[in-house]
Length: 251
Image (cartoon, rainbow, N blue to C red; front, side):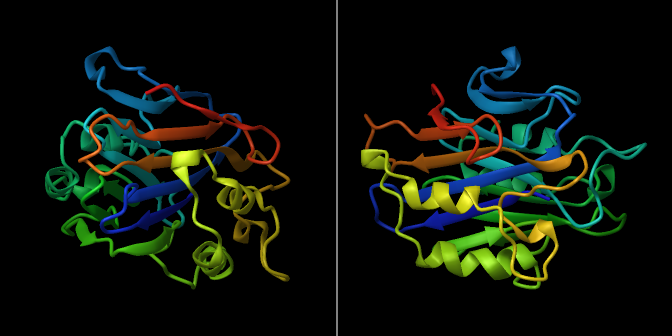
């Protein structure tokens, strides 16, 4: 299970802020965000070195896409394609609305169940797939304001992680990308404490006795499209947040 936080602000110089912790088997090899694919030289993304896909991608048109497993679907399955293909397919498009429409037409049975977030500075969408045959991919616009998603539905507080952390993010000071101030969100992404009595998976920063846990973290800001001279910003922690610093990714 991963966690993604999205803040949408209409008419703001930075209308989209995104925070994401990636939870995965720590033994699974990966590479930090870069332009890894020669046939997609417009795309910056982290690479899953095992399947050659990604969990989070941003293109030069400023479309961002992230994939999350749904519950009880960790890892590959024989006969299914890698879900890491989907963010890369999304950022082949220049607009989030066009990408969401295209990805909503895929065959859900080709992949294990997923939540896919596709956004730009204008629109944002949540695509949900059960992975079952004869079902459609649901495509839902994400409202203005702050939303969170894990392996559950968007803003679903039956998820222990969202029940604890959604109100905390909504109450926290909003980052100021103009001045590189992400302090409050970095602290929340680094938090290792679940609610009392909850399993470790209720924490933002997951630590388990096994191989699974939080292995990296991202902070992304997209500027208003009218600010043509202003680039997006991506800060990346190439390890467990709180143990390693966030460093800027060259875009």
